[in-house]
Length: 140
Image (cartoon, rainbow, N blue to C red; front, side, top):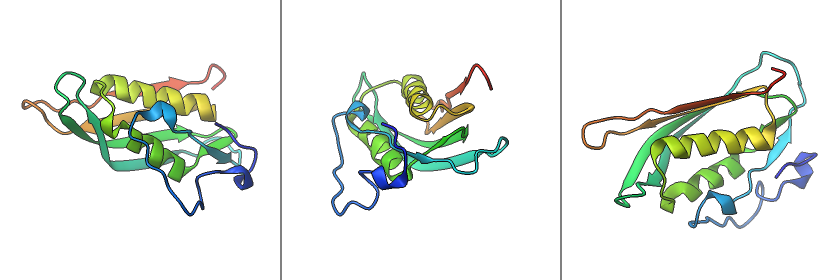
């Protein structure tokens, strides 16, 4: 979901916050206009409490996410991003698939010059998995 101005946001400033547990497809990613519109600015977001479920064991997987992008016309609104990421809590997917999905969803809603999402997952079975997905616009 994309918006023309901050006045159109439905989540930021709401007196009630609904946390969805069924999956990220039910949570809209909202954007706000990027007014500076200059090249060379990188936005970096750190999400140290990401949780998803292993699709085979249903055990929780914990990660720190680092999201970086160079905005073109839009920024992701942080409360919408928080609720979107929270929706992975009961969603079962492998680490790599979750990171790929997040990167594609952000790229689709913002149309940045590029976006990169890295998941720094805690070890399970003695192995840490840190998948990264980077997407670039054709005209970047």
